[in-house]
Length: 547
Ligand code: ARG
Image 1 (spheres, rainbow, N blue to C red):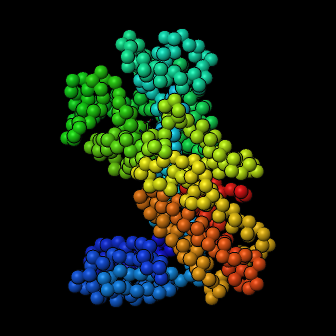
Image 2: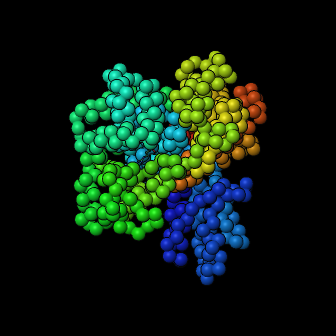
């Protein structure tokens, strides 16, 4: 809460002197008369100097211009009421207030598609959460790098190539549809046909030895996949800074293994390298046939990233089913002394169908994202056939993003297109609609709102509620940033849109006889537009101009 930074610093100072280091944090007050609450003193109720602390706090809060009134309860909850007039003079500085004190370089590893497989429903949450966190961290002032981290190496690719060779498929004329059919066939064959398995393993070995003939085939397949992945990402409005993949770090692995062994961090056990870190289950670094594991590649990827950029913090936006993998990765990075950078697995739950089963096509495959996008866009067309294609696309993406991000990322949710495209309820359509309404109101008024100051005495209940809703921006922004949880901002955008609609529906604003009331409402609508646009930016949604 940087708008109140001075206040917080001063309070922390007092606490630091009396009870050692302690930090003050603001919460939303549960008393509707107030905006924020500080509850750091509650646990100090019985402290021998609590009366002194209380009086120092009172004095400091009294001197803070942004605070209109406050109370300290019997149990030492402190409730604060923000001065609306002072707030309204600084509301446009919100982008400055949300900057962190110590910016870092943050790498976000998300998307994670694999060669030969289309982007499907299983990738949606990683893409949405990743893009949203990318925006949130950037707005907070961090420098952010996104890496799609392609699964473009190893056994699955060797299986595809072997299948193509065995079935004498003309690789020069292969397209993405062929490739997507080949992948499941090849992995089936690998499991049941020993001869095929041997051939695939030999190909995998050749791949790892950088055999030029097989590399040429690999390159060809990778290009076909990337082209199709990029088409889907374009439709869904995603872009990445880095298109690195598993193949980019393969050459670093032998040296990494050698070094870990000489440092006594790993040992050979039946041909496999195992981490010497005591843990249950044991952490396998390579397989007994010497081949590399998912973990081997992820370890080398960290080394590669640190070599190329100075990265302070890495976020892996990956399905919670990979919890064990990331737990092992992060433990190993620590144990292997790869550095003191931060690593976090940002896990998420699954998208289910109406019966609560993982969302699939009728044939039982994971639904392709491009098809999900097309169905959503068709549904929106059904509801409103007048929309131009650009707006339709933005709305389809709003639906796919908002319906996803409004759910706490750890919770599974049911994909329900009818519900998600509804104009009422907590939907992407609803928040876009409130935004468009506000824009329309301002455009229809021919009044230059930038010159208007609020007339505080003439604010009514619905105006005040909306303004006091906007005061919470920094709070929710920090909550999302600190916990890597975009849903706080999706909920908050819905809350503000609701408050705007209440104000808007109360009366016909442009026809109001009293000029100060009308101007107040236009000015507040202008605030709302910028807050709503900023929240959409945080969520990775583009606001539409008309609906
Ligand atoms: N390609 C992986 C998969 O399909 C996801 C990659 C996630 N990122 C990572 N660094 N492991 O499961």
